[in-house]
Length: 471
Image (tube, rainbow, N blue to C red):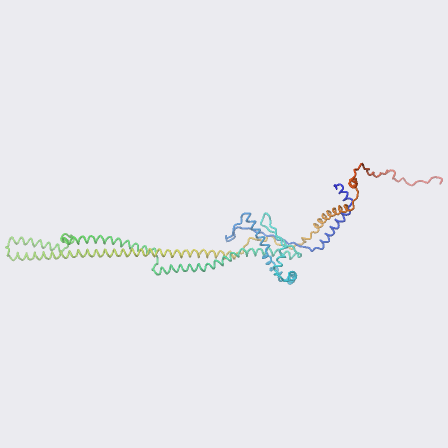
């Protein structure tokens, strides 16, 4: 069937098309009138994928891919059962007797009321994110316009509260964990500090570095004294050895006043003896007296020289003992300095352990304070841009749209019905139909005669006809 034949069928069966299309439009109008009116309330939110919060602990979400992922995650949270259950509780649906009865009639008491109505609310909730911004539109459709506005507003507010709770929950867990860790860290710090204090008290350490400096200075002074004592000891031993060989050769012995006086008297006595021997004879009492005096002086000189020798030996012994004492003092001081250095090293180790424990404790304490602040954060990155208003007109059913769609669908169905009727009751409407039906070639056709056109002048009224005369 070509287009011409199809058009001739439509023209011939126009009543079928009109009947089917009218029936479709009428049925749609009736069904639309019987459908309950639905109202849609809409609110818009701004969900910013911010990188850093006020405390500086947020993760970066600056790239478009991360921003899209973050927005998709927040939409899933918004449509989650947790948020829907909180909405049911906030609206008091789970405490409404009629709602509870509806749940019992539908589920025979299986499950929970809030979960049942959360599923119903989620099915009627529509979330549409913007393609080029962070604005998200929330829409809820219901038979009650005021209830629809309340539900969509409750979803927005509950999402903000849930998002803030999900954001603060890890911080609360971290704060609890840090609080437990601080107990053991505080115990470690106190133990390290107690070790330092006990070591200081046990060894009498007040200022470790200053005491080492004092002991080092004392060791240096003792070393200098040891050098001086060694030189004095060497000098004393040298004098002692010299006095042992020849007492008179020791300068200190010959320079003493007693020895010098004895030598002077001895020299004078010898001079007097020589002078007297020239004057007197050998047996003269004066010579004998001078000789006895000279012998006494010589004996006294030898005695003094002996005493001086003993004194030099004593000085040498004293110098040796002093050198030994200073040497022992130097050795003891060295041992003291070494001991102090060892104590300082042990003290430094204990102090480093205490300092490390203090640093770890301070860091944990700082993190605890930060996580506590984060857990108490009331700022979120989701805001309500436009609150939901109570819809004044129903969003469905859409009468004009339904009638237009039913008209188009009815027209198509009418055309299809006309074609089916034509197939059942086939008619010859043109030469093409005759040739196709007889399956014989057509030799010619007589065109339909045009309707005769009457002369307008002949049809014009000429007035009444006059009667013949004489009748």
